[in-house]
Image (tube, rainbow, N blue to C red):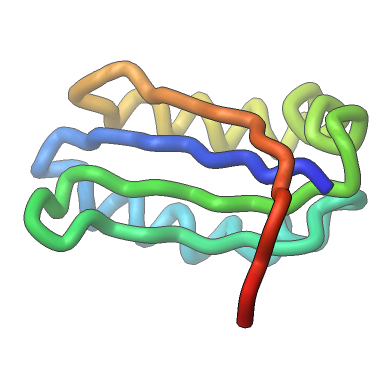
Length: 98
């Protein structure tokens, strides 16, 4: 399993716009073939910072999503709202305790 973590910092005036857009697109992203999990987090003390966590079958599934029309439209809209460049990591999940 591949875990994708993306840190995004938004212009303050775009925070609500991003949240609305994410709410509209989240089901489409989650139902994309190969995506098994999707969460959105907002930093408690700096509300302009968000993180997405998504679980993918493998790197090929993530790349298929990243080249899809869905990703291209979501990312273009999202990127325009940034105050800083996004950071992203693809990591292997080693341990999970629930």
